[in-house]
Image 1 (cartoon, one colour):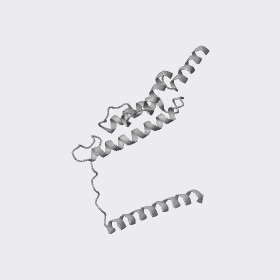
Image 2: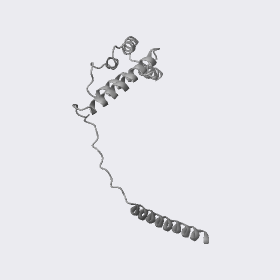
Image 3: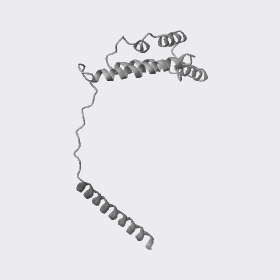
Image 4: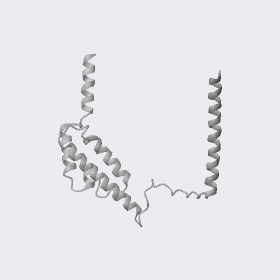
Amino acid sequence: ASARRERSARTYAASRTCPSAMSEAALLESIIGAASLAAALGLPAAPGTAAEVRTAFRRRALRVHPDKCGHSLATEAFRRLTDAYEELTARCATASTQPGRSAAPHTPAPMKKRRQRSWAEWEAELRTREVAERAFSQMLSSRFAQRHAA
């Protein structure tokens, strides 16, 4: 039982660090020394959508996050990865609003504009609420009086 516990503790500790020492250093150096922002995320030269950028960022971030990776370059690599993600998603958002390119498929439909209420409608609603509050308060006070009368 203790050997099993010790083995599971080692497995847990291994899962909390980067996959392997060799690939860890190589990945961190490839992120830090990347020639472009897309290369830092492991993407082709021009990513098409923000979803591609997000997926690539999440995959790499899971491996190089300073809380999970104990390497000394992890913080710098994660900062570079975050900068690349923010810049590329901003570019994708700008590109999707430019003429000649269709908007991203997840763009929500424009909301219907609500009708403006007139001042009389606001006052009528306010009076209705005040009447309801008074009735509720009277009900509570009468219940309180009934309980404590005896």
